[in-house]
Amino acid sequence: MRLIRYSALISFVMFLWLAVKKENPDLSLDISQIITYYVAAAIMYGLSNYHLDYVESDIRLGYISKFMLKPLSPHLYYMGVEAATAFFDICVRVFFLIPLVWLLGYAYHPSFLQVLLAVAFLPIIFYTTFTLYFSLSLLGFWFIQVDSIRMSALFLIRFTSGMMIPIIFFPEWFQKLLYYSPAPHFAFTPIRLLQGELSLTLGLHALGILSIWAIIITLLQKWMWYQASRNYESTGI
Image (tube, rainbow, N blue to C red; front, side, top):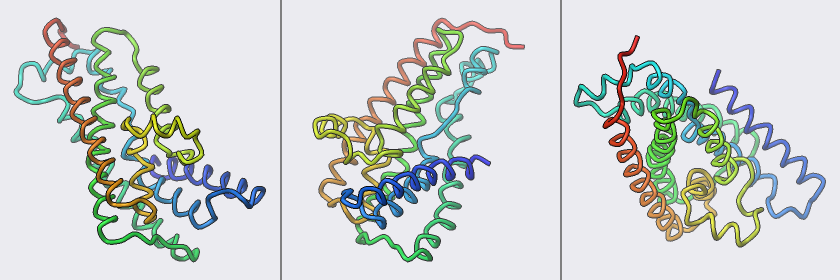
């Protein structure tokens, strides 16, 4: 169901932009670019979309206390739970959506190296976004409810990653500001690589920026877990 629901959401946005193109023929994106862009967005959507309310629930009910007694990282444990689903979703979407694009008469035109670089983004996108959402879920150690914070971050990432609106339509100053954040490299950058419209040099630079943010967010997560585990007390149920 999740696979169908998220693909349908991206499809709705794609058809919305196709309607805009029909009414505004001078739009900078042509129909081929719109379709290939949003099909790629639908494929990548699951890499940055997690609802970790069960982590918050484990904190509240005391189940997470087992990670304080065993030499097992809760971060890696929960990430493993999501990893299988996320990458299975990607494989299924690639299997069905890429042939559909070709049947419609459109195609991607990246070089082999651009494809490899785009694929290199995928595990880093997954790791970085999951770690960010997990860190926000750890706020459950200090607050009763944190799902609104996590959902706000989710919608902000959807907007600033280019998942819903290609970043080229944002003001130029905002594009420059976003470039040094991780957000556009969650979707916009790898999609443009798959379309063959981003150079390898810029792609490598973006991958470096995303990798740096992955390290920063990991350090934040480790610090939050350390602070929480020092004072956490629970008997569970």
